[in-house]
Every structure is written in C-alpha cells, then in structure tokens.
Image 1 (tube, rainbow, N blue to C red):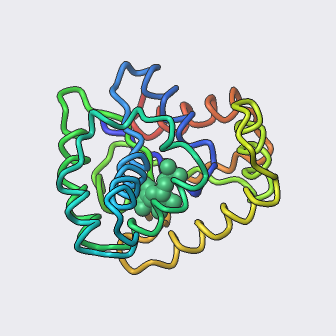
Image 2: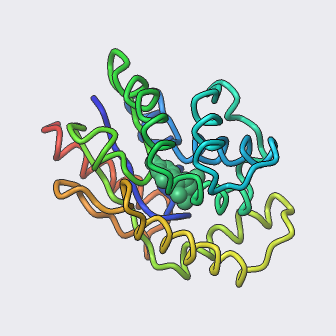
Length: 208
Ligand code: C5P
C-alpha cells in the first residue's frame, strides 16, 4: 500500500506521515529532506542555490543514507531547499529514488509537495494536509523554541508564506492537491484528532 501525504510548510504532514507509517508498519520517507540535503551540498561546494548544473550534480551524488543531519531541519535549510526544488533537472534526478522507495514490497508512506501528483500518482491513498498559515507558524515556532533555536514567530510566518508562494508558483511539479486527494485541514485539530481523521480517510479509501 502506498500512501501519499502532501501539503505546505509546517502543516504537520511529517508527523502524520510517521504515525501513519507506524500504524501500518510501513517505511516512511520525508522527501523534503532530499531537497534540503541537495541545497546543503550545493552551498557547501560554494555554488549559488539557483545554479542548475551544481544542483544537478549534488542531486545525482546525494547519499540518502545521510539525511539524519539535524542541520537539515533549520528554517534556513527549508528556504534553501525551495530554491533548488524549482530546478526541473533536480526534481527529475530525485524522482527515481523516491519511486524506488515507494515500490518496496508492502509499500511505503511518502510526504512532500508532489507525491500525489508526480511521484506516486497511483498511490492507494492521498491526503493533502493544510492549516491556516498563522497556525502553522505558531506550531513551528513552539517546535523551534523546544529545540532552543533562535527564531521569532514573525520570521517563521514570513518564511512559511515565502516558501508556500515559491512552491505553489513554480513551473515544475508545483505544490497542489492531486485531483483525487482527500483534503485535511488541521487548523483546529490537535495531533491526535488530525491522526484519527487521516486514518479514517485512508481506511475509507482502501476499503478497510
Ligand atoms: O517538507 P519540507 O519543508 O522539508 O520541504 C522543504 C522544501 O523542499 C519545500 O519547501 C519544497 O520547496 C521542497 N520539496 C519539494 N517537493 C517535495 C518535498 C519538498 O519541492 N516532494
């Protein structure tokens, strides 16, 4: 069973994806980490993030075993990721790995921006997770505070809005719900309620 979880920055899709994967005993891939790692490698080699040649080289040489780096989780890494993510060659280079991950025996859960539309258009269940931008910024702010990251709520909100705009307006695989995705607005739900709602949607889709 392949489950696609998409949605904008800080919508809670990553947390939901992990919990859904645990429930069904499936492997889970946070595809945002791939773009974050490509951006990190481009910058580390001294190139501009919009340098298509350098970004493609970084995508081709990416070792997905090295995605655990905590530096990939910072707001700066997310912003940088959305710049390399606009480059079609980078997206194409990361596609095979994502599809291979999804094709594991038994299936997988993948979360990102284009899983339901491009990476796994034939997924058994697709959920597009949203929440009001102020709610997303507040959740992310509390998360960073807990990790003692020096950020302000205003800076996080600005980052989220900038990233949403970049991700939704790019030509290549823009962020959008697949026509057959179920929409889940978690603005007024806590994580337990959001999880229950997501599980209900998936069970209905797969006929359980
Ligand atoms: O999900 P996360 O916030 O880690 O993603 C970082 C950035 O990577 C996104 O803002 C987006 O530009 C890009 N991304 C993407 N397609 C995906 C996953 C992430 O373009 N499937």
